[in-house]
Figure 1 (tube, rainbow, N blue to C red):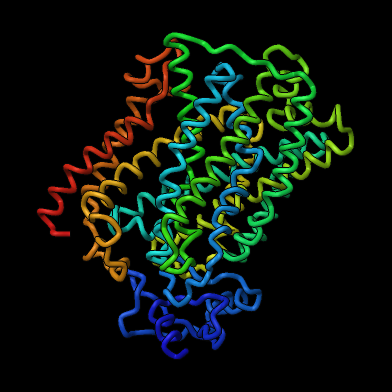
Figure 2: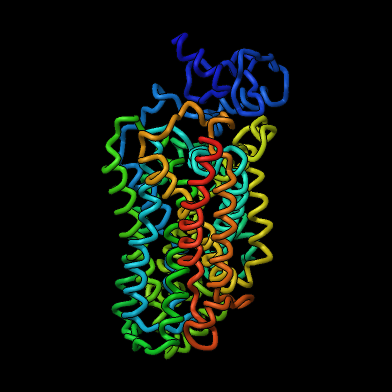
Amino acid sequence: MAEKATHDQKAGVYDSYDSVSPYRHGSIIAPDESGAVHGESFVVGDSLYARLQRYAGKLRLEQRGIERVPEDERTDRNVYKIGTMWTAANMVVSSLAIGVLAVPVFYLGFVDALLTIFFINCLGALPVAFFSTFGPRFGMRQMILSRFWFGYHGVKVIAVFNCLACLGWSSVNVIVGAQLLHAINSDLPGWAGIIIIAAGTFIITCFGYRVVHYYEMFSWIPCLIIFLIVLGVFAHSGDFSNLPMGSGSVEAGSILSFAASVFGFATGWTSYAADYTCYQPRETPRTKIFLWVYGALVLTLTFTEALGLAIATAIPANTAYSDAYANNHIGGLLHQVLVPRLGSFGYVCLCILSLSIIGNNCPNIYSLSFSIQILTRRAQYVPRFLWTLIGTVIYCAIAIPGYSHFESVLENFMLVIAYWLAIYEGIALPEHFIFRGGFTGYAPETYDQADKLPPSIAALGAFCCGIAGAVIGMAQVWWLGPVGKLIGGEFGGDVGFELAFAFAFISYCGLRYLEKRRFGR
């Protein structure tokens, strides 16, 4: 036990489930600029930070931040919880909303949109499942792992993008939930619904890893039941329309742009994949983790997005659906499916679905704190649960004014997410497979030693090249890239994430080769 306490003191971190937490004795060990302690410590038992951490310990809140989880504390052996985690995070209305976009935004038919949903989700889930296998092996959060690919200082750029992604995801998701609550009670303003859902998310994420996993283990079940009810009611209504598939360059451009939105949602979990496996034992089979994560993502996303697509096919020819969507977007569509046929029970179903957003936002807000802490040493002196609170306030401030512009916010945000994560993957994957030769090429103990990690020159250079690829391949309302405009009709076709990945991958291989020759690391 003393040996464990020494390890924790040197790491400068204490988990609230630890029986030997120095926080409970009124002192902590403060890390230096690199996050480590080199034989020197100071007691701050009366500081605000120490008092907050002791208070967090009493409430059994997780106190660990970005520090590596020691092997003797990786005791979460329930692999199936990883699958239920990602099932719950995606068995939500936000996923259904992606499928809806295929008709009113991209003007696709049913079959072509359905095939796009399936195959692009199969692609987008791959990096999430792959990086989830790193958690048990190294006991590190995803952003800390990223230091091995982007360097100690370069990863801070990635952390900024991840912070924006976490806040953006949370804002988009909470708008969907607020729309559902407004569909239940038109007297409830959008801002009130946003605050209700955000408060529920904050309470769960405050407690940390174990409570998030426990909540997600069960929260998907009522959501699945409600979605099956939605499917049954809509199928029985006869409102489904097998919209014909388009053809030519316009169809190609629409499919590519819709594919980018689907890919952005599926791969959006990549930048915090290992956050939810870092307490798994080191010997946990990587194949088992990969399959649980991959299966949960592909099955859940395909089901929910296909359901949204099916409902959206009623919009062009049925004025009741088109008016409902125009007035209250996703909430209006689901209201139109359920309430006229199920009455009061339909409102109960809408209420449950609105609260499903909590399961979707938990991973975003929980992981936000780690990205903030990696930006600067000073951020590590703010307890994790306070960063969770600050993040909640910020995304509410974003969501409230964006409530009335949901459709454009969702489409544009999904595409931007696809761009930056394609660049992230285009750098991390060649570093892992080519330059490190797999998992044996890592020295985990150097995760906080800047002089043992890559210098960041190649990664940042490739990141810039990836941005250039995204820019020339974009097909956005606010920007049509020179390559994007060559595909499709008037609005082009978005190939931003494909070019972003290709530019980042190719440039990184060349730059990293030169960097390793020059610096030897």
